[in-house]
Amino acid sequence: MSRRLVCPAVALLALAAGCSGLKTYPNDAPKNVHVVTQTERGVRAALHVHALSGECATRYDGTLALDRASLDVGVPPGRPSYLVVSFDTSSFMAGARSTSVGTLLTPRPGYEYELAVRYKQNIYDVALREIDRDKGVSRALARRPLAGC
Amino acid sequence: MKGTLLAASTLMLAACAVQHPQNAEEFRQYVPTSSFAKVQTFEANRPLREVAKTFQAKAPECLNVAVRSRETSATTNINIVTTYKPTVVVTEKKAELHVQRSFKGNVIVPGKPPEGGDYYVVADATPIDRNRTRIDIYAPTMGTGTIVRAITGWATGENVGCPDMTKG
Image 1 (spheres, chains in turn orange, yellow):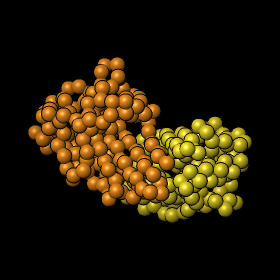
Image 2 (image 1 turned 120 degrees about the vertical axis):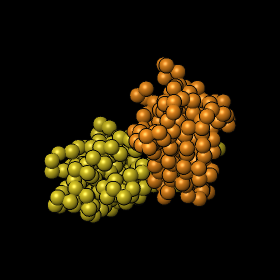
Image 3 (image 1 turned 45 degrees about the horizontal axis):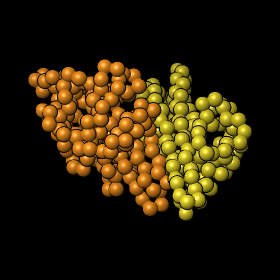
């Protein structure tokens, strides 16, 4: 049995991604998103990056495995991107299961972002912060679903 | 094996759903009478307004989701989408979190569920004093461990993560 938890908007993205298959995100833009990952054994986390057009249409840019404690990612500043974090688990009895959560982000030039990704005992948390290094301040960014773009 | 388990659980769901509490109050009255559900009560060391605020923030963020269950084999073709609908009701004296769920696909649910789906979990928060809140969670005994732990974390403020709704 496979189970998939999706928001409607994410479902569309998953379909779009599924048609072309997963590809590695080029990650060649200047690094502005620091991803900190804490997952337990048996959980595979990944970050899927989608670019947005003005009409809220998406273009899948690629995926990075969140298989280490920290990872620096370059998300183009000044234009909206849709970041989706997925958690995949599988077991003999339960089969494959996947949960994903997405948020819109338009990185501001000169700002840095921290994406904290946690999954422990079937509870997950994906938190995004914007950091102004010059002023030494940061603020939490609320999750912005694609449906509201 | 897995198909048998899923079919059995689907039948159980259908059987449970024959009796459809039509609102949260009917669900509260139904749970203590059921062998498959129970009330869990604890105290949170937080004021009611903080618990209410967390419910209002986390319920729509975490519970407004759908889960697809799919299994295909030579003898089985199961494709069910379970949609969850959270509602938070806050007054000066109480905060309530209602979670309903509905099914689409090849599943038969006899009877008439309420609009928005059958009541799945109800959590009530009432003040004990200025700094403590009593939490009562009404839920089935099976398959709700993850969501009950999440609601407990929201109430106590100790873990504000989202439950993986693909896990029981």
